Length: 80
Image 1: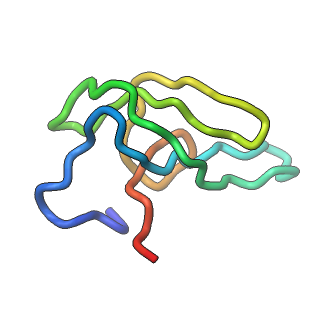
Image 2: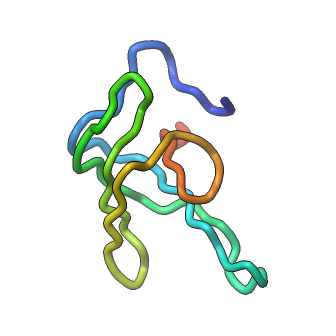
């Protein structure tokens, strides 16, 4: 998976991650990374978490979020 962190980094409550938004089917809004806070770790081995996603217009709560680069998934923020 692209952008995988070093071995040993695991999701935990209160960590900041990126949530990849879905975007719209017609392309009016593209899929973009959004800041999110891990609110629960549902499966540490499979890296499934619950998130509070911080959107410009408000908060969004999402459960059972898997790790990846596609819309509706989370990943570690890139180092800059």
